[in-house]
Structure formats: C-alpha cells, structure tokens
Amino acid sequence: MIKFSNIVFTLLMFVSIAGFGQDTLRMSHKEFISIVKSYHPLAYNYRLQNQIAEAEIQKARGNFDPLIDAKNGSKTIDGTEYYKQTNVGLEIPTWYGIELNGSYNYINGQKLNNSDTKGGLYQFGVTVPLAKNLLYDTRRALLDQAKSALQLTQAEQKLLTNELLLNADNAYWNWVRLYENYLLQSRTVSINEERLILTKKTYEYGERAAIDTTEVVSQLQSYEVEKQDAYLKFVKATQELSLFLWTENQQPYDVEQLIIPSQKITQAESYENYGMLLALIDQRDINRHAALQYYQQKFNILESQRRLKRQSLLPKLDFTYNFFNKESYETELLPLFENNYQYGLKLEIPIFLRQARADYQIAKYKIEQNQFDADYKQQELNAKITAYKNEVISYQSQISLMQNNIENYKRLLNAEEIRFSNGESSLFLINTRENKLLEAEQKLLDLRLKFINSYNQLKWFNENFEGN
Image 1: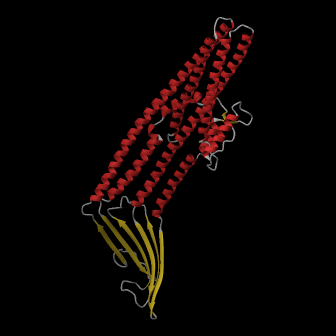
Image 2: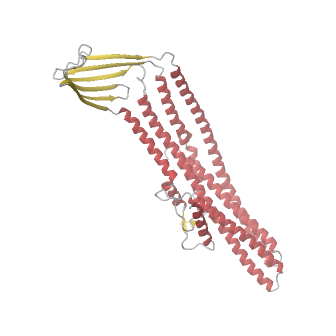
Image 3: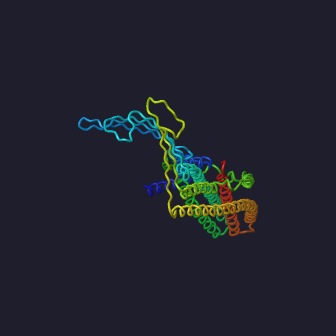
C-alpha cells in the first residue's frame, strides 16, 4: 500500500508538471508548523509521556494513603461457640516516617485465648523510627523521585518536541527552495524557447547561420533536462514533507492534490527576527536550558537514592506504643506508662553492612558521573550557540554579496544580448553569461536555505529554555 500510494502521489505530481492549476493546494509555514505541533504522532506521544509522569506522582502519593481494614468471624464446634470477633482498624502513614493506627476490637466466646480481652476494646498506637527511616524513607524517596522524574520528563520531551519541529521547519524551507529552483529553471527554459524562435526567424531571414539554431536547441535541451530534474527533486521533497502531515486522529494525511508553498523563501521570518534572536540568546542563562535541567532533575533523583541508601547504613530501631481502653470504661490516657498500654522496641543491625556500603558508594559514583555529563553538555551547548550565531551572521553577509553578484551578472548578460543584436557577440557568450547567472541564482537559494537553517537552530535552541 505504501509503494502504491507513493506511485499515485508521483503520478499526481507529473500530471501537474505542465502548470499549477486551480486545484493546487497552497500551504504556509505557519499552517505547516501548527499541523506538526497538533497532530504529529511523535508530538502527541511526547505529551502522553508527560501525563504518564504525572500519574507516577499520584502513584507515589498513594504510599501515604490511610488504610482501613475490617474483619469479622466466628468459630463454633459441637454447639460450643469458641469465639465471635469483629475488628475494624485504621493505619495512617505520615511524611516523617511515623505511623499512626487505631482500632476497635470486639470478641466474645467460650474458648478465648488468655491474651484476648473479652468485650469491646479500643486501641490507639504510634510507631516511631528512631534511627533508620527517621530522616528519610522509601515512601518519601519515591515521591521525591516521582516529582523530579516529572520535571526530567518535561525537559526531555521539550527537547524532543523542539527537535521534531526543527526538522519539520528545515524540511519546509528546503521544500520552498526546491520549488523556487524549479520556477527558476522553468523561467530559464521559457527564455531559451523565445530565443530559439527568434534565432529561427533570423536564420530564415539569412541573418544567422544554421549552426546558431543548433546551439540554441542544444542549450534549450540542456535546460529542459535541468528543469525536469528540479521538478523531480521538488516531488521528492514534497513526499518527505508529507511525512510531517497528519490528521487530528494521528493518521497520515492523504495527499491527493499537488501542494506548493504559499510564500517565498525571502518571506521567512528569519530575515526580520535574526537580530533580535541573537540579542535574546546572549541574555539567556545557559543553566535554564532544558538539556541542563534534565541533568539537574536527574541529579535530584540520584541524590534521593543516595539519601535512601545512606539510611541502610543506620541500625533499624523502631519504638511502638499502643494505648488501650475497654468499651464503657472511663478513658485515662495519662500517665502513658501506668495502665492500659503496650510498648516495644525493635532493633536490627547488619553485622558487616557490605551491601549497604556498596549501594551507597554506587549512588555517589552515579552522582559524580551525572555531574561530568552535565559539565560536558554545558560546554557543548555553549559551543553550539557560538557556531550557530557565527553561521547566521556569515550567511547573511554572503547573501548580500551574492545579491550584488547576481545584479552584476544580469548587467553582463543584458550587455551581451545588446552586443549580440548588434552583431558584435555570439550565442556562445550569451549562453556562458546565462549559465553564470543561473548558477549564481541557485547558489543564492542555497545560501538562503543555509541561513534559515542556522536561524532555525538558534530559534528552537531558544525555545528549549525554561519559561518558553
């Protein structure tokens, strides 16, 4: 199906080669970028990735959700009711590692354990970590990491989205360049067709030799080949551009009509905005760039892991206190350790701590690696900024020089045509002048594309800063 659609698409292009009719679609740069932002599956996928990261935060918050449990049961054998029990409890984890709990337990029967309290019993308790998990624990680490992971994902998806838009931007203006090159070749062919008609007439009048007609025909055929080649390149660029065109349902856009740009390459925003963009880039704090924000959030995640691993070096010492009160009895909370209470201390100490020490060292090494990566990325970003700025300034200067050069070639061609009409020149010299002019005009298109591409690099680089 893909090969068949490409064949149909190519046929549609060649049907229109004779001229762009009323059914031809025109597409502006603004419309194209808007379509890519809104409907391209990669852009949509990047937005979904951010939503996944937001859901991960909600998942991590779930570790702090209170837990309610209830149990009801009884046991009877040979008519003897061993017990009948109802229990309802509530556990509340807190941010600082302390766990609160409360419960109501009712039990009655003829075969109760000695440790059971007959009737209804209320219980309120607290568990406090005194060493490990006091300052930091898994629940807090998971939530901190999820929050940092969201910002990391947002920075990463921002980079990927802007890279997609950069590629789309460059593809659009390359498409415009090839379209204008085709128009340039078409105009050259038309000029040479008129020259052939004029040469034939002058030959019929006996003013020119037959070989002049042959030379014009040869030149015309050469330009016609270049025109067809230019059109093929434009067709190919249109097919490549269609890869960025999708519908709102993330389905490939079905190109059924010839599409041409609605603006010229000289109408790109880069010509008016490049000075302002250069000044804006100079004011940016490189540390606010999404690439460095990515490493900052990665550092936060690794630092959270390091803090958690450090807790494994501490002994686990938990203190638990429970207060009891029988149903229908007057509550006497104080003093805490006089009546109706239960407490306990639990101590765990790994002897060698080899795993804990190794995990902690690994966490520290990962932080050091991340810092090296961040430092290298910062140098790379600074180097790219300098390179892109130099390219923009240089290409703008080259464009001005080439425009002046083209004007000189036009004057030389016009002068040669006047000399030819006076019998002082030859078709060979006219063709030479015309070829030079055509080469210069094509080179100007190439320079304009290079300038726009360098500007786009800076533009989407600027979009990667925080706040855009």
